[in-house]
Amino acid sequence: MISIAIIGYGNIGRAVEQAVLAADDMKLAGIYHHGDINEQMVNEQMVNAVDVAVLCTPTREVPRYAEFFLRHGISTVDSFDIHNQVWPLRQQLMPLAQEHNAVSVISAGWDPGSDSMVRALLQAAAPQGITYTNFGPGRSMGHTVAAKAIPGVHDALSMTIPLGTGIHRRMVYVELEPGADFHTVERALLADDYFAHDETHVIPVPSVAALNNVAHGVNLVRNGVSGTTHNQRFEFNMAINNPALTGQILTACARATQRLRPGAYTMIEIPPIALLEGDEENLIRQLV
Amino acid sequence: MISIAIIGYGNIGRAVEQAVLAADDMKLAGIYHHGDINEQMVNEQMVNAVDVAVLCTPTREVPRYAEFFLRHGISTVDSFDIHNQVWPLRQQLMPLAQEHNAVSVISAGWDPGSDSMVRALLQAAAPQGITYTNFGPGRSMGHTVAAKAIPGVHDALSMTIPLGTGIHRRMVYVELEPGADFHTVERALLADDYFAHDETHVIPVPSVAALNNVAHGVNLVRNGVSGTTHNQRFEFNMAINNPALTGQILTACARATQRLRPGAYTMIEIPPIALLEGDEENLIRQLV
Image (cartoon, rainbow over all chains, first blue to last red; front, top):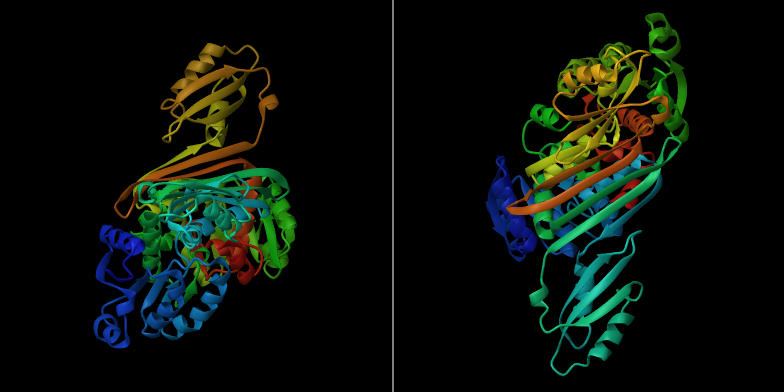
């Protein structure tokens, strides 16, 4: 049994808990608020009892918690999602993981994560060509936070709507502070760098909570060339509950840590079979 | 540069040739008709000059050629496609590859192959649920051969038409021998074990050659459960030139042989990044 500690207990931590409980090869060693983690507690409660720490902290907290657990020889998994910092994080964690005989799987969610694996596979299938990743419909966390920061906004929800070829519309639902002027809010929001480059619609609503929905999706398209043959067409679609999928993929990658050599990995560096419960022979017979 | 020998020069061998010539990290060491391969020739021409033999022989010839090249320390790739014999072939080649410090990637095409990787990934994303692999529209080699074997048939083409949930229609175009009776042929074909279990339509045509088209495709669908969350929906579609894609994937797997430890692998045991041309850092920056 792989012993799992969940670090951080928001939407994603709860989803990891459900995925771990649903897996027959895992047991839950504990759930910790990341603010409570300290040296003494890790030495007393975790070093001998935990195989993998699944980091469900805010993404910017991931690097220091990953370092901390790896230094104690505990493998880690995270869904670090700042695309241009993935490679630097991998390089930062690689020597630590190797030194302490642990594995760190970074950026393990659906994008970055499972979508990255699909993009890699499609590039192998048609090395020349263009891949478009179209997100949504679903809530964009970054854009929602940016909208909430506009003066006069009490609550907000920014939905990402795919328009194809990697172009997205932003549908921003705003619940105003009492006395705030909608057109002032709208102007400020449209001028914000998060929204200024995309087609953006701002819509006043009486309650943002009434619109809440963790659905999300992707439409990933590649048209490319295999050998010298053009017009090879590939498409990958998902319509999913976002935290449930992220939690499930983190859990699958927690399993993979037990099957990889020490080091830091992104998901495109992991054989798909390493993500799966069950023995090699049955999996190959079933899936190949 | 990875030095490639192509063994067998039919549709697939030609497609591998194009993919190898299009790759900047590969060179073509030679193209051989598999019937010409012998001990002396391999020792004189190949042992010191070839890194990977790409086996483009009929599928039933794959095991003996794979064994032969592995014994000479030459890595192999094949698209062996008899699903229930994939695991036994892997077990047969594993010790040979390890003993001779070589790598064998087996069943490397699109199904088995890249579809297998997608199936594995989707099972990781939603471990409980059903995956349906719907093939086509495209020519089924096995069914075409079975149709050609019916007395009175001069030439035939069996198209696989996807009806969803893994159920397929067979559209069988037959060009009759002079004097053959269509209804006799139709009855014999419908009674053949290849066709007796599916919806099958037999259509007489003046020329099968006039219908020839190497297009094929897949619609692979999974609806499953991530953690405890049901109705997670995934779909993978392709519409492709069949030999071109098979040749490209064989070529990508030939590259992977140079990045894996000695042994025999199916594609679900290979990290996607190992299939790709270029350095690790750029690939991770681009694709993750």
